[in-house]
Image (cartoon, rainbow, N blue to C red):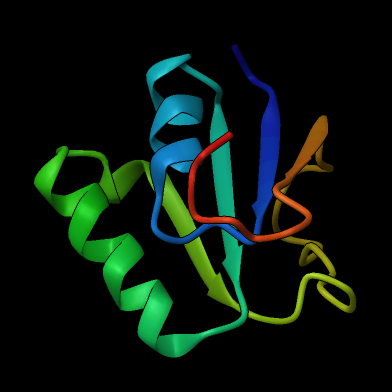
Length: 86
C-alpha cells in the first residue's frame, strides 16, 4: 500500500508498530515528549521497525506534514494518550 498514515500521541509505539505491520507505505509517528519518543524509538528498534517510521517530536495540535512527504491518507489519534494502544 502507498498510504501515508500519521499516528498522533504515538508513544510508546503499540499503534505505530501495528500500522507498520499492516504494510502502509509510510508511517509518521508524532509525539510531544522527547522522553516518550525515545521509548518509541527503543520499542520500534526492538521490533525491527525503526527504519519504517518517520518520528517527529511535535504537538499534534499544530503538527503539519512537510511538503516533502506525501499527503496523509489517514490520521490515528489516541486522544486520551492512554499508552494502552487501544
